[in-house]
Length: 356
Image (cartoon, rainbow, N blue to C red; front, side):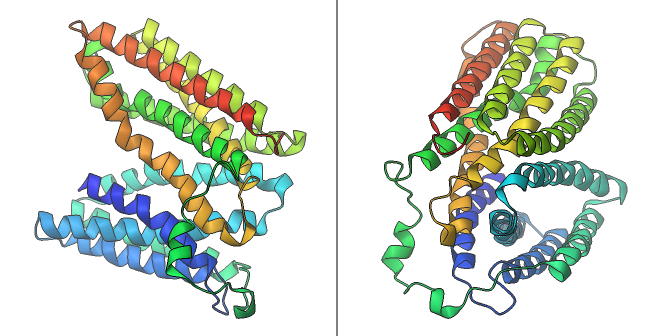
């Protein structure tokens, strides 16, 4: 179910982004997809609430991913559409905050309303309520039909490949995002088992929840603060490099201090580093998009660099842990590998020439 949903989300964001780039409705290019995606996503969550078996669950979850990523593609594109370059760090920071808060608050809502069915219905209702202010107050840009290029299925399909030789800055930005997200995914993937096998905690799930809250809190604070700071100093790359270094230190801490104290410090460092990265890197990416008319599609391609690492992380991590009879050694090597991957990713941002 999770794999099918991940596959749908990977395809849906660039696909619906490309469609929103070509939308000529009077209400705007992006807003129809936000409205349709939100309503469809809410209906799909209700379908999940009443799913009678696994088949309908898979269908419902795939529909949730398709509809919500259609809305997400439109909202992502609204940032470069409407936000000046010198304010994108702040806006990107707040955007990163909402994604993290969504996971935490959504989990809390589902846990407190009582029952799986009630949890899905509550999330569907909140989705509609929270989308309403954006829908009512959006200053979406209308695309006249006269500005629309002639449609060709071949050109439409070819548009999803952005040649890094023609757009090298976009290519380096995509690769940087992919590698740093891979490092972060590896770091988080086996944290529960790290607490169980290496640290030896009595209640690993409860401790993981504590670490998740610390990680999320640090991410939220640093994303907002450093997003604004990046705008004020007019620089992006130095913050991406610094965030990679901080995340590297987090990995080293977990590798060489497999204790509860080390895990707490690692959560603070990893959340802080990834928070800075989340805000500043997205602002940087909006400045290297190849064509203004294809922003939603190109940002959809960028989201693949963030979602694909979650699929590849187990492929990298599992053999490393399995290669060592001593589990503590396996986790130490795992977090060292994650740290080095993050450093490589952060260093590649220096290859981008058009952004400071």
